[in-house]
Length: 420
Image 1 (tube, helix red, strand yellow):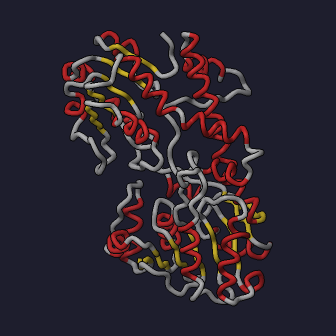
Image 2 (cartoon, one colour):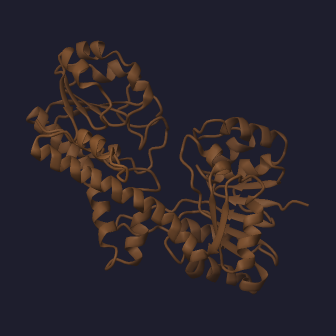
Image 3 (cartoon, one colour):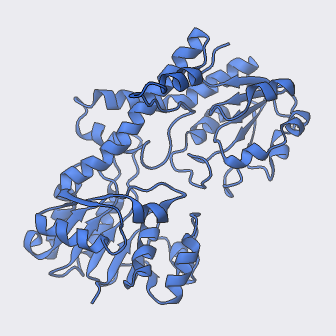
């Protein structure tokens, strides 16, 4: 008989995980403190955007395999998939993990499995999860099976990658690792590797730190190339012709709940050692201000100007705005007296300055900033945009537009990482 699974946190990771287990025959209890999420789910509806997830959720809710509550119910497996944001001082906010773990203490029983999926600082299992579960009066190390098994998925492809990607399971002991491995084998086609909990926690952080450090190199190169009057995108393109070189791409900053956050968890634990990681994070965090200053340089002054921004999500072709550097860029513009800001993003419904279409957003604009390279933006009639704008200035932070084409239309085209 299959275990009953309780998934705590029904966001971008928890809900797809719950739906995936439910579609493979498990009875799932979905838990979220947001009653709006719970009510929608019990109607077979979702409030996040992810390809095919709405169909899967509708089917498993209709079949009775997935039901949502605001509080956990007695189950055999508890999967904690709640947010772990960063505080203003760049330390991890573990309050959601703590609350979720504490909420199952009254109902956890001998033989249950407890899995932390939330990305967390090293030693979270040892220093937070296990001590809280000991409040249940169980002999935790012997009575429960506890592990960390971080997700490795990308928005837009979550359901595919949950199945196809390799996975790591780190338990408090070997038996815990094997129990959790067998559970995920219900739908994971990739390899599942077992290790200890702290190693699994560090693997997740290291994977995103690797990407963050390499993006920081690209962003620093962009600044250097501008100073030299050359094009960083050419430098990267030609350097990557080397068989052992694979430079990342620069941009207006790094967003999302992984790359922009996870490295800080390492810095928090080892501030005297994680020097490269800390520096890389600061370089990437500096990019919104760099774009802001470049905008001011293009226009001479930002006072009484209109700025139009294309894209406000943290990456292309998704609705996810978590830690988006464009949000910080908007906040910098808001500090300028008399400035007008307009935004067009077809993936976003609720954000300030949003316009219904790109042409309304560009009306009487002095500068158009390409912040996110949504594929849909390729369909924009740039000749029409030029007619709507007051001054035909473009700042492309993603090497998205064709320079020659826009120049022929009369635009003053500026590219992040390219000097004049």
